[in-house]
Length: 66
Image (cartoon, rainbow, N blue to C red; front, side):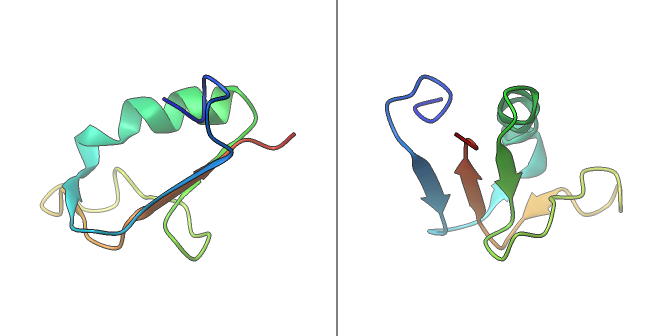
């Protein structure tokens, strides 16, 4: 939310895995604001791809496009 509030330009998270439901709301907010919420190499995070795979193991990169 610091990126959405303008308090940070970029957020990179790569310490450990998260559940995809932990990131989906932030992803929707950032995308609605015209930003990017991706895996570290720019690939979109796929939330529906495999219902048995609920983990985001590669980290996240968040930025607004100003």
